Length: 393
Ligand SMILES: [Zn+2]
Image 1 (cartoon, protein in one colour):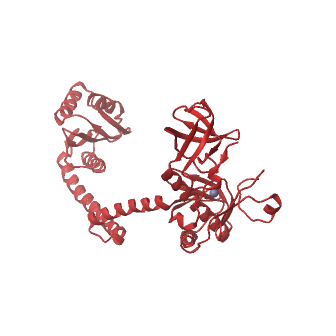
Image 2: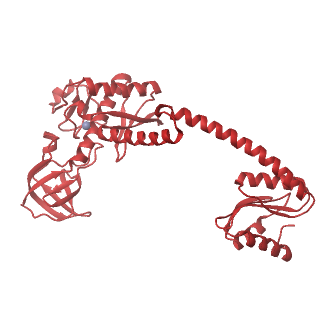
């Protein structure tokens, strides 16, 4: 049985070990050592990576009670090797995992929340609680967790109690435990059965930032980041906000209010544009009144503008003719809206799309889409269709 150095001291970065076996596995070469500081995946915490001598350790798992290091290359059995843990990765995982203990333990102590799910992802940590929390409790949980990091100076304790001692310890656990139980205590925050690796003191977690809370089953799912990840996350958010602040000429704490004001201004402009467009569409429609089929081009219209222009012309023309409106340019193509009162444009539009590299559809009497063709090609298509009688009638 491999000696688990990571259980004795989670801060061992470098260690010496003897290779007990090395066999070809599915993803590389499976190496078993007499002792290891590599943490195998377990309890929600991902495996460590690093090196054994010059060979890369890609994954570490517990299989049939053995800790198996999946390596990039074979290592001779009986050789002595120096193992080095990828410490940036491991310390990040320890910060996330320890932060999760503190948040879960405090939520349990404050409101009786049970942690029923934990995932330590590459980006964020998620905790699932079995009951809902209010926004106020969510904010209080973050504040309390960070205050714990600042003010509680007690080292993290790890104990291996006897079954009799265990009966007198109140601890969190997701499942019924058998065999030797390992209890991890963050004094004042959490006491939990756990096999993972942890920091030595709450201060080493650095910072706990709760990112979001969503309803999940009977309770909530909370996303959080801790330590270096929290700092990088907040730096990224700040970088974005600084950009927005410069672009909007707003103070960094006023970007939200400024964006709100700009959106309201934008909505008012849109609404004014629509009434101006509608007035122009009514004038245009007058020119086509009573002319039958209409093909017209108008610059700078949105799909909604095209729809309204087409509607205005059809109302003015009144009869059974169709109206085809286009907006765009020869290099990037044209958007279209085509309508015919009580008509059926489906087969016509299929032909149009086929002939002019288009896509689109809609109801039998009204279709919208786009074409990759020039204005000349579009006009030619309508002239030819009209001659051949394929235009809707
Ligand atoms: Zn743990």
